[in-house]
Image 1 (cartoon, helix red, strand yellow):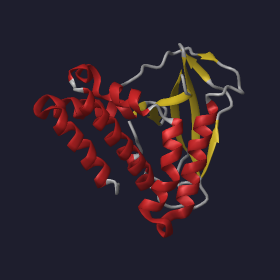
Image 2 (tube, rainbow, N blue to C red):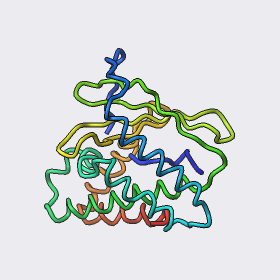
Image 3 (cartoon, rainbow, N blue to C red):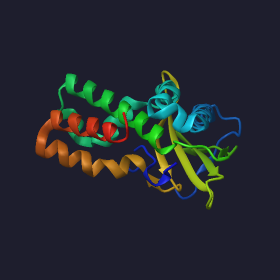
Image 4 (cartoon, one colour):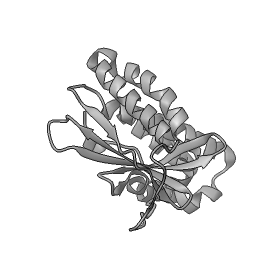
Length: 200
């Protein structure tokens, strides 16, 4: 498992004094489903291979993440300049990249476990669910998820590695550069290449 490349994934600033939502907040459910799928994928390991792990992870990513919104956020202001067909292609490529990178990063099991903090923090209308991944052979790793409620319920819209590094923010400058220099089709090809590099 290679958490240094975990990701997925615009910086969404975290207020210094967040409100605390109910411990039983339904925003925890998509995060729990993702954690369960990642453990199952890790247990599949080399025997399942990248394709097998992606098969486990893909339906949970589809249910737990708001991939269209994440794609729009990571592309930023340039999104409005992209034709609808290219927007759809970008969302599809972003989905493949997300699934492939999870399958690549979470590729083996050695007793790891996720612990989800029962306290869910409010970030305006959004929620922040914190988890800890332990049993990695080193210090426990904090991974937080920002979720937003829509027609389909609570969905993950960003992932923060060690509670501070926004996965969308780490990609935004790269995506903006490709879009500015090569246009929408070049950006689609770029995201597809990132998916292929991860084994997707």
